[in-house]
Length: 95
Image (cartoon, rainbow, N blue to C red; front, side, top):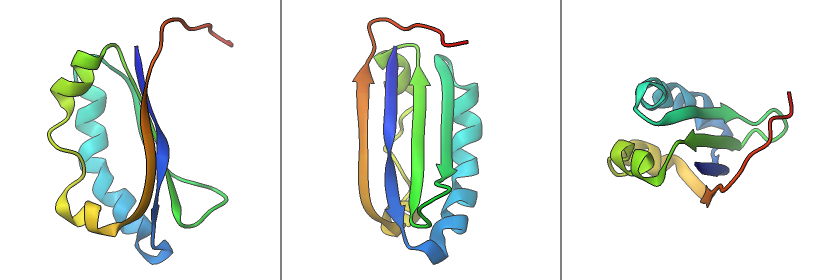
């Protein structure tokens, strides 16, 4: 399993527009083979922060979905980013 997690920072005035533009990525990602979860969401505490969380069955599934990252418009709106991929060997359900 692969987890992609972190956050990006955008101008607070552009955050809602950025998130609206992400719907076109989120919907197909969730339908993509190997996608277990995919979320891009507003941080409830920091108006500049957008949280990223993805969970995939495999690295191959991540690579098959990725076409090159954010669009040029989205890339221009990102002021900073801290996002990483994590290879997961095991998991435990908390529910």
